[in-house]
Image 1: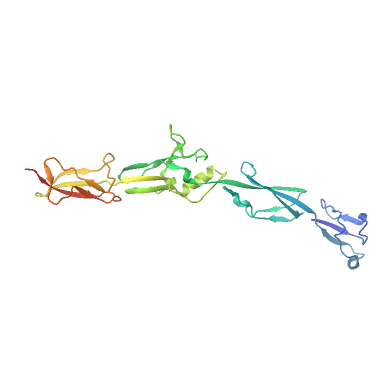
Image 2: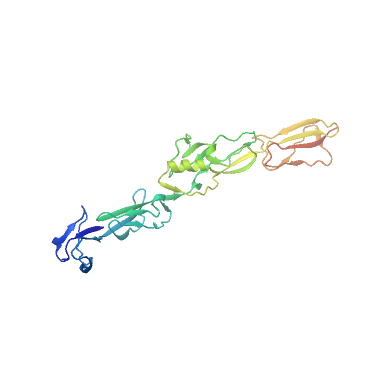
Length: 284
């Protein structure tokens, strides 16, 4: 914005137009003047604005143009406020959305930077299963595609491509209880990835990226129907896991199933330590 001090009513004589401050030159537009009838004979301030062009470029974090630049015409000292356009697969950096730019130069160039959108569903937690032992896993092996930088405390697994040892607290769904559990990144894990990948925009949605299966520790007691004494016992383990919710009995040698005793027992797959009794009779 320019200001001129009018010390005379002779508007056609440039010699009577004086600079009011450094860098605010008269733009030669004599059409922007005020009536000499009202201000004749008195020094008078008059604002004269100059048009300025502002070009806004839309680029990714590497400087690649994402779309056609936008040309805006404003005036010296004015401020621009606008909503950046949307580009498929990209998100504008948050502090530039509805950004305000001040026009102050002959040519004004501004950039709105966009980050590429990514989702965490590209990560994969290696499948892990075991028989219940009362403790939750302390860590997991996670496949992380090469497109991501990896947090410094995610340790590379030797001999496995793009696979890292990740502490359990970076994942949600980790438990010590029996059952089938979906695993996904915990908020801590997402924040760690964001900090390691400032050039990417992560979706807040956290889909399942793996499964943890903890099988029940099933105990089956074989009890002599006549004496009521336990004659044998089966306890499931990782080699003989209780996976299905039904166990087909393996009658101990020298015994047969008691009358009415089915050859299987059912148990809840989400119980940590289910127990069952199978009644048997000793063979003659």
